[in-house]
Amino acid sequence: MIHAPLVVAWCDDLFLQGHQLAHWITDYVDLEESLAMGSIAQEHLAHAAALLGACEMSNVERDAHVYERPASRWFPSELSMLPRRDWPATVAHALLMNQGLLVLRSHMQLPDKPRVQQLAEIIKAEQDLHARHWARWARVFASDPGLSDEFTHRLAGAAALAVDLFGFPVSDAGPDVLLATADPAHMQRQWAEATTLVLEDAGITAPTLPDVPQPRRPGDTSDPLARVLTELRWARGPGGVNRYEVYR
Image (cartoon, rainbow, N blue to C red; front, top):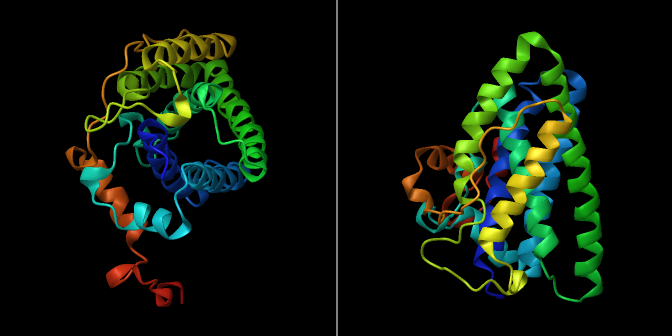
């Protein structure tokens, strides 16, 4: 397997946020948004799987990585944990995370293999679409006097959690083969600048965005992660066997 600790940590973020966004398929703002959340959640999971594949992780290894790895070996960003049933906060978290993904991909050097490059083009198109989706919601909130203050408050809270987007896991400071010589501090600053422009274009004064990356902590220090992992794994029986009867 290719040694890519920061890219793999971002796969944790994609899996977790994809799972959590799926709640909005039923706890929806409206029917159209419910459908959009289904697509975005599914694409997050697919992007994570594709990136793990680019790290030369087999399908069996990838499955174990998600369903059997203990919380202590997960290294998600604090921003990847979404508040339940809080749409403005969800938009704030997702917008900031999406901007981070755009920065990450601009520095990634994926293997020069036709299948990997084809997937990279698909991922790029889908993530760009996600960026437009979340920016549109920012404009909706900014244009509504009754919602703008609330969204600004949620945005400030999300920004405070974005300190470790480009921080390496505390147990593995790199290097990351897929990011080559990319500097985490530079990526964090690039993210802060790009996100500020997106928010200002939406008519929102950007909060203070952290521009110095902090290391990612192991997941067993995060209570919300335990809940999400339980949800992720509830359809798995002993030894990882699928419990198909739960779908009946």
